[in-house]
Image 1 (cartoon, rainbow, N blue to C red):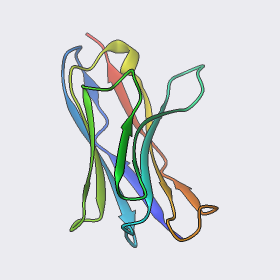
Image 2 (cartoon, one colour):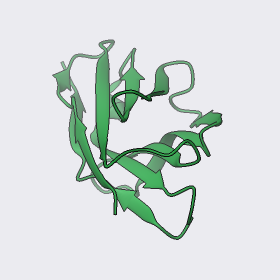
Image 3 (cartoon, rainbow, N blue to C red):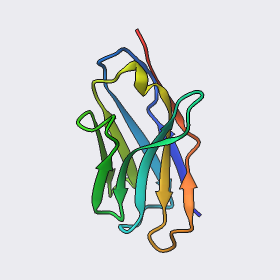
Image 4 (cartoon, rainbow, N blue to C red):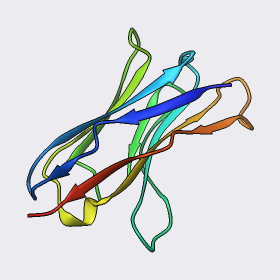
Length: 118
């Protein structure tokens, strides 16, 4: 069983930056797939960025060039560095982990709110 906890969500002005953190307990395996998803009111949850099986990094077209996903192996955390934020980035952001040992085991964090508004 893996527990995920997001932090770092905040109210930010358009053009601003935020760094989201996801802490994983007991930890992250190199083979795990790590992801950040978001869900805006009235919309479906969508993938934002992923580190697939510890190797390949993918971004949605809407955030490519603005967001960076990275893993801190020592602190067992996954980060989403967001820059040039726009009002359309307003959403609840969720951390997601798929076990590299068993892809049927998938975990979500409770989410953190990001609001982009002037």
